[in-house]
Length: 299
Image (cartoon, rainbow, N blue to C red; front, side):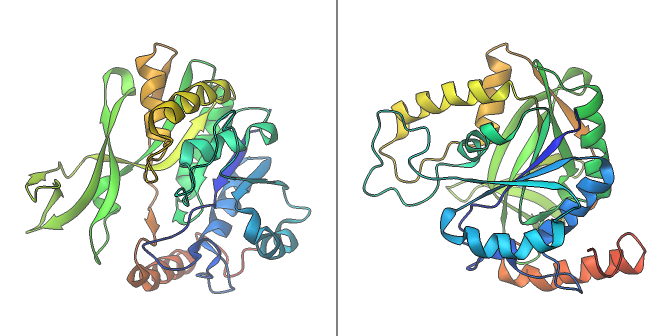
C-alpha cells in the first residue's frame, strides 16, 4: 500500500499573527504546503489528509481542491476540542487545540496504512519526502517508526529564538530521545539554548533537529488514544497543557513497544516562525526554482 501524507494545519499561528498555513509564498501563489504536496506526489504518496479547523474548512478547500483534483486523493478531518474526550468535559478556559498528537488521533479514520506526518507551514524538501516514502514502503512496521532529522544549524531564524526538538541518536540510528529546547538561537557564532533562568548552554553544530516529520504505522492510533486518556487525567485543567507527538514517541520507546529510526536528510528546511521570516522563505523558494528544483508554477 502506498503511504499517506497527513498535514497538520489546525494550529493558531500565535507568534506569526495570521493564518500562515494558507499564505502565498511561491511565484504563482503557492503556499508552503503546495511544495510539500508536490514533493509527496513525486515521491510516491497516494493520499493527502488535511487536519484543519472546521471554522475555516470552506476557505481551505476552495484553495486546494481546484489544484489537486485528479492529481491525488484528498480527505479532510477536523481537530475539535471535544474529540476523544470520552466522559471529560471541555474546561471553560480551554481555547487552544490539545496538541499535535491529538491532531493525529483525529485522522485515524482517514488513514489505513503507513503514513507520514508534517506541519503545514514548514518546507521540508524533495530528499526528505523521498526518504520518508522509502522508509514507509520498505521498513515501517508495528514496532518500527521513523523520524526525519534535519541539521539543527540550518533551522534557526535570524529574527529571534526558535523552539526545536534536539534529537538524541542512540545505537543503530535509533531515536534515544528528543530534548525540547524552547529558546534556541545563535550567540557569538555558537548555537545555544537558554533556560528559563537566563542561563545559556552550547549545542553542537552537527546536532540533529526534529521538524515534526514523522513516519508511522497505523498501530500508533490505539497507543495515542491510551496516552491521551492518561494525559487528560493529568492535565485537563491546565489550559496551556499540550499533548505532543514527541511525548508519545518517547512513551512508545520507553514502554518497549518498539523503536524509532532516525532518518537524516540533506534537504533544506525553512519555515515562518516570525513575520520577518516570510521574505526569506520567498527568496529560498525562488532560488530553488532558479536551480530547476521546482517549476515556476506547480499545478
